[in-house]
Amino acid sequence: MTLTAPGQASDTEESVDALTIGRRIRQLRTDRGMTLEELATAVDRAPSQLSMIENGRREPKLTLLQTIARTLGTTLDALLESEPLDERSTLEIALERAMKGQTFQALGIPSFRIGKGVPTEALRAMLALQGEIERLRDERAATPEEARRANVALRRLMRTQDNYFPELEEHARSILTAVDHPGGPLTQRTASDIAAHLGFTLHYVPDLPQTTRSVADIKNGRLYLSSRLASKGDPRTAVLQALSSRILGHTEPTSYAEFLRQRVETNYLTGALLIPEDHAVPFLLEAKGRRAVSIEDLRDAYSVSYETAAHRFTNLATVHLGIPVHFLKVHESGTITKAYENDDVNFPTDRLGSIEGQMCCRKWTSRVVFDEDDHFNPYYQYTDTGNGTYWCTARVELSSEGAHSVSVGVRFDDTKWFLGRDTPHRGVSKHSVEVCCRRAPADLEASWREYAWPNVRTPRTLLATLPTGAFPGVDTTDVYEFLEAHAPRG
Image 1 (cartoon, rainbow, N blue to C red):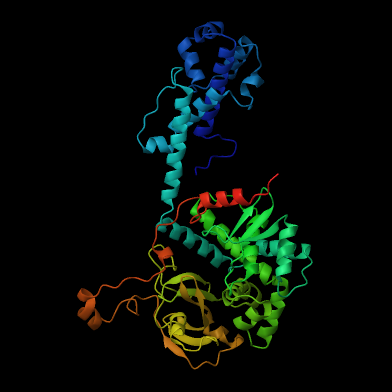
Image 2 (image 1 turned 90 degrees about the horizontal axis):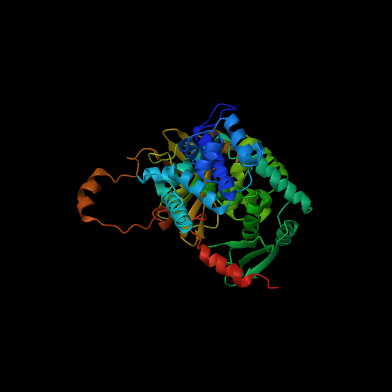
């Protein structure tokens, strides 16, 4: 995006204005049955000069525009008005602009004069092709590298704000006040009340499109959710995630960065509704006063999943408790799928700075917890690193893509506020250094490198090309057919 000085139009804006004025002159001239030569004679200009004005290649002076307006029996204001031109002129202007745009130039397609002999259908076809080419280019731009760049930028924003977004907290507070929520755990009935407050009725159906968690029919104010919720699933979460996008006024994302930002905002607002700030902060401060902060206690107090409680703790810990933290979600294969830190933990990253997709250290709490037989109680561990000592609490949870560990950690000096600080478990990790464990010991590598061929188990979503479309991974045809079948009749 190129910025211009205040009050100064860009070259593109000037050419667009000239083109629109020229086409309006041509439209008015032809409506009055005048030839180009007749109008040129009437305004005392050469036909070639007037042709350049009509084609937008020359910007006429104000005095000439006034003369042209009088000759055509109209006013200067009429020539400069913003009302739509006829279809042919509108198509010609759109194609003229397209030919000067990046798509035509990148493909090496030369501009040409749009004469009267070019059929209107041909103009429509060329504009449709140009639109489709731009759509495909936008989709292809959403590569894994582009996705990682967008993710890194978002993580940096989260870090600068200590993963706390006051505007989203205010949205949650406003909604909870509107439905008279007293605080504490959010019930399924309250989730339904929030839907009604936003003008939606809830409909649980057995045939929800497989690529979706919910589908909102904005036209008819209906929110569809699956009637086949997993036994361990939280029905409130699906409702609130769907409604959060409506609360935040999300529109169809135009880039992966916007899609990712919307998803993070949706998850944040859902957490803020399930664990309200005004109620949770006193709860956490009281626990800190007793030196008994516990993610499990936060989970149990609000009847949410451990992951939701861990996420929500990262939102509130630094701003309200003064505790920098880190959060990790690690697949059983060892791959980091989600990460956040503002405590200088220095996790491994790729060349773009992305943590997600990297292998978590085998000696880090998030990996060690998989080897524990006791998955009922939390696992605690101190880990010495080249950047200091960290304490973590972790749990293993099951998902559709296998087991994941979810962990929250703090620097050694902040361990005094947490339950589990007396753990005897210790480890040593230099997880940001490749030779720590991301490379095999030299003797093992020498023995087996030429004779091993493993079949990777990393979650496919981390390896596949980013799904295309405005809503990556969603089969929009399936969604539209579903809405058509379920829309109320009459």
